[in-house]
Amino acid sequence: MKPALLHGLVCLVVFYGVSLEASAEDTTRCRSGRLVRVGMMVDEIVARCGEPKSRTGEDVPIRARTAAGGTTVIGTTRVERWTYERGQGQFDAVFTFEDGKLVDIELLVDP
Image 1: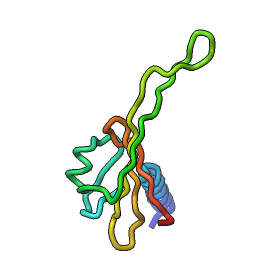
Image 2: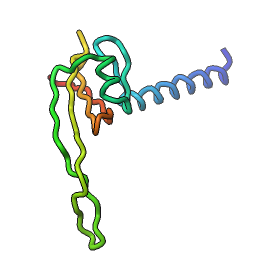
Image 3: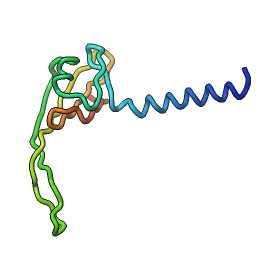
């Protein structure tokens, strides 16, 4: 194989490896094997993954800067954390939703 071609293939493999690693925290698979990604809504997640093992939720204040430089509460947003078992040999996943939209996926390394 010619060195230039080999170099090009190595660069391509490295590029795709970096791309997949960068997006890994934005997607995961449920126990069903179906893919979920940040940005999906609660009903889409339930349709793909079913009901979670556990849920917690809280109303979190939304703050804004005042003209004087302080902050004031202008409303609240609902934040829920759902824990899913993903199957044999897979770490559990915690899905964080804000106002019904998936905003974060975290894999639990230690149960």
